[in-house]
Image (cartoon, rainbow, N blue to C red; front, top):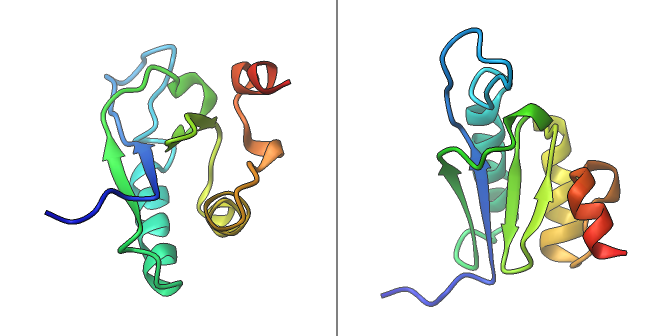
Length: 111
């Protein structure tokens, strides 16, 4: 059994029916964001200590592609492929959440 991961990134790839008022992360680029995390972790040699997984519904699709980082329980919203390097460098490597991408409820909890 491999050792526990230092950080675990869950990327919502949930698909809701067309017309759902919340939308869904799948149509907002969830799969592409997940693939970008996997590629970035691999490129930096981090895939043995950090993991990026697809997640089912985390019930925050209204915020855009949702990403949750554990063990901290930090929630990001509206994540795009171009945001992934910043999250990996600033949060996963340096331990500082990327403030501009935090979900509103996460910002309140951290103050």
